[in-house]
Every structure is written in C-alpha cells, then in structure tokens.
Amino acid sequence: MKKILIAMLMAVAPAAFASGGAKLDPVMIDLGDQASLQNGARIFVNYCLSCHSASYMRYNRMGHDLGISDELVKENLLFAADKVGDLMKAVMPKEDARDWFGTAPPDLSVTARSRGADWIYTYMRSFYREDKSPSGWNNTVFPHVAMPHVLYEWQGHQRAVLRTEKETHRVEEDGKSVEKTVERQVFDRFELENPGSMSPQDYDKAMRDLTNFMVYLGEPARLQRFTVGIYVLIFLAVFLVVAYLLKKEYWKDVH
Image (cartoon, rainbow, N blue to C red; front, side, top):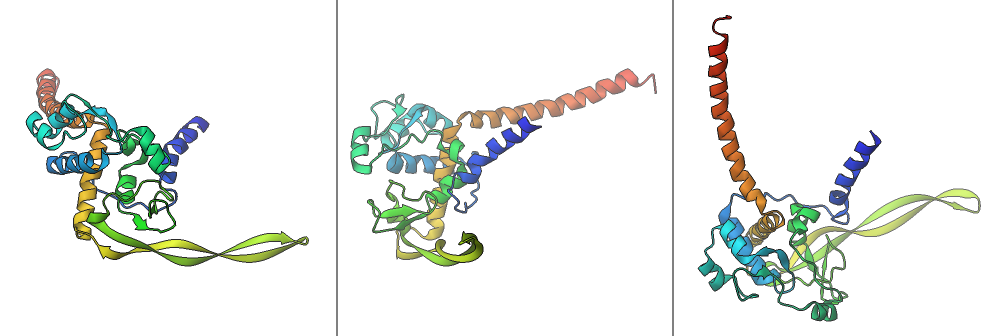
C-alpha cells in the first residue's frame, strides 16, 4: 500500500507544482484536428524554432503525420535546415543563447509530456510587462523566466494587476504566543494596456493550436494509435457478432 501511495504522489506532484502555484486554464486537445495541428506547426517553426529545438522530430515525419507534402514543407517550414529529413534544431547557437538570455533555451520535444498541455496553454497567455526584468517581460506561470514574449505583437501588452492579501501567523515572542498579520501582493488578473494585432479570442485559438501541435510533438505515435484503436474496435465488434452466433450454434441442442 505504501508503494502505491508513493507512486500516486509522484504522478500527481509534477502536475501540482509545474505551474509554480499559478492557476492553469484548461485547453481542449484534439489530435484529430489536422487544421489545428498544421497551424500549430506553422507557429512553432516561425516563432519557437529560432531559439528552441525539437530535436526528436524530423521535418518529413512531421509533414507526413500532419498531411503536409515534402514540397510544402520545403516552401513554408524549412527555414532552419537544408533537407526535409533533417532534425528540427534551433537556429540560434547555444553559446549565443547563454550570452543573451543567461541560459540555453530548452529542447521542446517532450515539454507537453513533462509540463502538461494546460501549462503550455496558460504560459503562452500569461506574459506581462515588467520593467525590472532583463527582457522587459515576466510570466505568472513561470516567474522570472528568461524568455521574452515573442508573440507580443499578436497578443499586445498585458499588465498584471495585484491584490493585497492578509495572512495571520502565530509566533513566539518573549515566551508568549502572539498573532502577527502579514500583507502580501498576489496576482489577481491581467489588464490589456496595448492591444495586439489579434483579438483575445483569436490569440487564445492560436495558442490552442500551438499547444495541440506540441502535444503531438511529445508523442507522435498517438496519431497512429488512434487509427489502430478504431480498427481494433471494429474488429472486436465484428468478432462479438461471430462469437455470439458461434455460441448459439454450440448451445442450441443444450437449450
């Protein structure tokens, strides 16, 4: 029983702490929505692949899975490589990234599996302006993140509105237990200071498409599993009818 409880806690812990305490917004993932996956791939290649790699994926594998021909991949998605069979690696050298951002941007191949789809979706919508930050940006899901908001032209400039919360703690002073009230600033909501080129609804949809693609990126075999699963269910349905008729044939003399 102890081993089972430990395993359950280990499974829940990453989801509980991945957001650093921030509330995550749910996102609907549909790997059968090919248009969404294609748009997510376009956003990823144009805006994420400059700094981040997805080195577990090849361009031609992605194109095959998402219904994009090699010719279209070459024309529209092949900016950081020479051949469609190349791995999806970042344009920016790691040394330059360390000099500019203080750390090398992580590979995003399995981020959806480690962080979760809700985390990615909320993270990409939670950047806000902060002059004290080296990049000029901060994020409520990933505080003090080195990454700037690369899609600010789409979303616009958000401002984080804080509220004051009071917490009462009991402490020991001169051998006596006394109560002390502490005030702290916590995130309340976002306010849009400068609108972007997209409406909030369109930006949320674009981030849903990007998240959808990153979920595919973390486990491409899921697309094949869904297809195989349909065939398996069809086979089981046919086999059920055959098994039922066979059972009736064997047991007709008994009944």
